[in-house]
Length: 335
Length: 300
Image 1 (tube, chains in turn purple, yellow):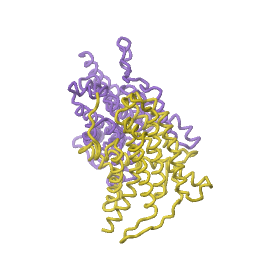
Image 2 (image 1 turned 135 degrees about the horizontal axis):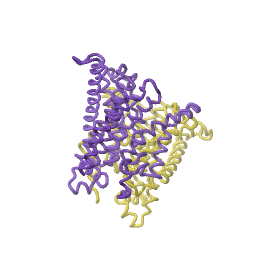
Image 3 (image 1 turned 135 degrees about the vertical axis):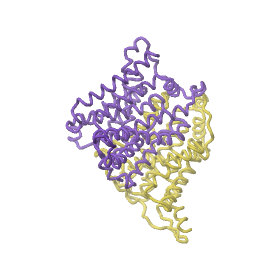
Image 4 (image 1 turned 60 degrees about the vertical axis):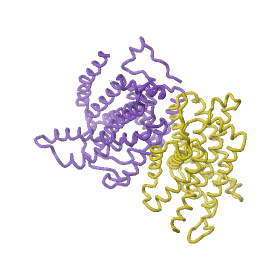
């Protein structure tokens, strides 16, 4: 256990700067369309892995990830247009000040989303899982309706003038942090409790797991990262519209988690990259027929996955433990 | 006072539609413990079935046109409901509930997405034909009762009374209630649970189709995504009444319809869709089992 913990920290101290270096070396997303898509894939990775915490680890079903993303995105974006664009920290150069304020903005977005997650999660997570799906769905719709009606948030036309501070470094940094968090969580006592809830909520409660408490905490953590992803998206696109947070977005994230294999963080990462690339690959088809088949494909994928291969691509295995699996086979998914 | 009574009439008319849809949710939840997301799409398909029946089949231009089209749409949707149950839900009967829920979501999305393709219904809204002329039937002290409202209320009432008789006074209804009470034991007692579940889908889908036609009459703009919001609100109605409880769904639907109409009438219309979700959250916080539901202790 100690060795595993040490390897986790090694990941944190070696892996993150490596990601950062990569982000710095690669061409900027404003210059190359490929890199722009890579950035979007990174943001999707954050979303997918954050939903994996709720869906894959805890076995709950949230359909409102776009809502938490919107809360985080708009909070950070508002901070960006009102503070970062106007002020500068004392004694610091413009870029340095912007960077620090931007980091603060992403954290602010994440925190706002986490608070929203707490407010939504507390009433619905006391009950059985399927209520969460409906409440989160409803919440995401309410958030969108509110944004569409509030002038300060740009209403339906969108919030413009967000400073373009997200670069690939920050996306990689947060994607790495999210994956690392999910991995570390999974291997901790806390994560074991979550897995117990996923496997059998009643049994978990019977052996003394505070099921509601753990579920709410997992949900809040997940919302935090969704908020961060929203913040990154705002500073990436420099404009946020309510259209960025429609129901389809939540569905997209669910499909990523299901496709990757519910219970596998690395599966979610792979699926996020795959599903970001898919519309790009389908672009010729779309231009040829003029039909956006994304929704049909997502739905068909979801159904086919559930009916034919409910474990997803990786099941509950992780890329980093594929070697270990040979010595200790994973138990089959319980019926 | 006149204004209040008028809102009351409008609210009851809207509420009866919610109630019809909520019944399908609650019945399926009763027998399968599954939120049938595709139910909202069945409702949408019901409206479109009526639209196509009315515009394509000249034979139906004779009276009683409305009744013929209504029963046709109900038959089509009953069939679709059974098909969905057979091919999407039955294979997953024994898998984890989360998988069934995601499948239901997938079916709903697939129907919606295919409906939006240009060679099916297309993304742009269509306009439901005027099957019944919109006239004011009666006006009592300034409160107007339109023909559409009267038809909606009457049709919903007939269907709900029929359903009530079916569930509480027939052998099939007894079987349904037995399966919803305890599926495994019901099967041991010789009830063909698969058949009962299929019939439940059939009845629920037929009611949703009727709701689709009634909505098409009063709000003629129909489009492939029309089911989402209405379906959600109907689900809220089912939860409010106590999910799995048939009388609860009727009362819940009426309540949601009334509250929404009052909120729009006396408040602002831009937040009309937020009202029902507010109600949902209040129900979940204070009485998760709903008005008529009893608290269920989970069996291990």
